[in-house]
Image (cartoon, rainbow, N blue to C red; front, side, top):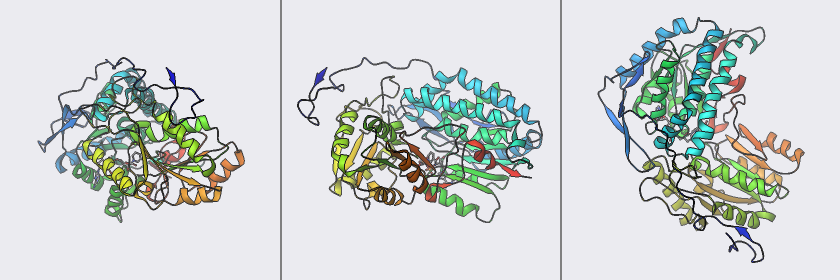
Length: 494
Ligand code: NAD
């Protein structure tokens, strides 16, 4: 249906979807095979937690209980480390080509069961099935394939030097890309000959626990990967266990700081992948249609639960009004709702706690008197949802411009010159990612060299590859994941 919209001159016609063009529901129907309750995966098999404590995993899609998850205590975490330490003695000695075979097997098994895992990921975490199916699962498999390729070539990473494994690696991951973060952590650790104790986030443990069955099917020796579940307390036990040679953490900056303090002086190696508040910078000469897509994808992908989300749009003053109008029109076509529906673009907020945090920060923007625009969509009655939101005319002193919201909320700021754009983009305690949209190649190179961000995308956004190292500056953390750099995080040069 074509009609005029208020954001456009009356002469211009456009296609509007929203309530005018309703899609029939298209729910993904593949079974997720979720067990009613899960133990801990230690030494190659599921065991009951010594703690005898359990908690519920809730689906943010509708608030329903999905499964009971075990909460590991000190004795459980110790059992996982003992198993990993024992396994290290043989795993670290087997030839790289043999480790490689295990990683290839894991990658292929993940591909075989991709649909089932995608449904489980969406039920457990709330992200649209389109994303878990087309992004999380293929990327997780790609990380295992990529590192399978490295396992027998480690002698070529640093000519004249050898990469030796570190020992048992303790890993703690967040809830925004549960399986993918697990792959980012486990694949390089195993490829370099280490063994692992990993803890998924408490709201999204299910795909990690399902992954244990892939390890069993791949015939991975017992103890090489151990999966313990629980919340912050269990995380602290994983981080502080004396057998850990290295800790790899992905999560919030606040928790990253606690971990850095507690590891000081222990000699353990540490990598921290923390929060972000990325600037997505659009110049007047940018390809505007593509830039609109990049900005929308940059902030609304995975409901904005993305460390490198383009949550601050810096747009050049001359096009600010027109560009904002285009963004609003594009927002009106986003389909928000049931994440299991294949038509959905923006799914559920991961947890009630996260929904409250988003609401609180959005309220601060409203209280500051900033102009807010929200997608006028019908949200499902059950579950945790928040409409795509943008604030225009934001200033750097506001909380919505400086704090990580981790939700579908975009703050729009303007600039006049490239210098001002760089100044504003770098005026943050974070430094994880940035985007630059311009027709001018020399400006892209200049901006990329002066933006203090671990990743700078040019005329695109949210593009990832296992071969490309990812990581931050400043309070976004240190260390790199992926590529050759990522291998060095899990080894010592001898
Ligand atoms: P979080 O820090 O609250 O939790 C992350 C993990 O740490 C969870 O498994 C949690 O149980 C555990 N944990 C909590 N307290 C702990 C403690 N004291 N000691 C040890 N472990 C503890 O973060 P979150 O809310 O799950 O995830 C969102 C954050 O993760 C955002 O800030 C986001 O930017 C960040 N993140 C960063 C990257 C990156 O690559 N830089 C990627 C994804 C997410």
